[in-house]
Image (cartoon, rainbow, N blue to C red; front, side):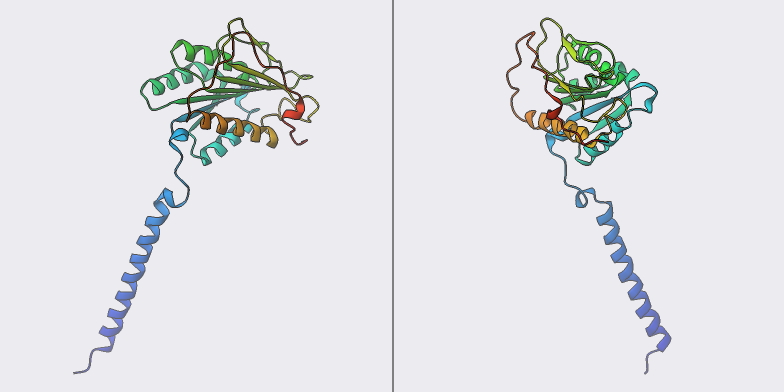
Length: 238
């Protein structure tokens, strides 16, 4: 008895369709699995949170969004917000820290966001929460650091609106004022400059690496480190 030609062709087509369906399912599973696309973040990075504070009007500090995106690509959780949110963000960070979900807190601010950093650090310290690193980009008002992060870096334009951060009596922690005058960056562009962004990210990466080991000695009260020259950052001209 001869097999039915149409039945044989239909069975063959059905088998082919089933094979394609299995292939598609396998491809979908691979695409949905994030471990195939990016390496898993280290435990230190996963328990770090970087808070990036924009300046006035939320439109002049968009370089912080770029920094945030690059950090997220490294598996580092970030929050980008306007500087007026500093108090509620401090409460949020303290809650996460006390619950054990957060171990390393890093703050970055531009313009008014940089000016708000000492207030955010002070509130976190009052809540019993340490700050590993804070980086200010061209704080626009006279800023005084009364309670410290483990390290505070203030990158400012000495012949522009930026100001060095002053250390209050009894300050504990390292304070670096980095003057980038003559480097070609301005108050509106400092957060968007590629070299400045690389410096910020490198400092964050180094702080996370330090968080894996016991903290180093804290600077003596009232002894901030000397200011660096613009060559310390050497940003490309815009």
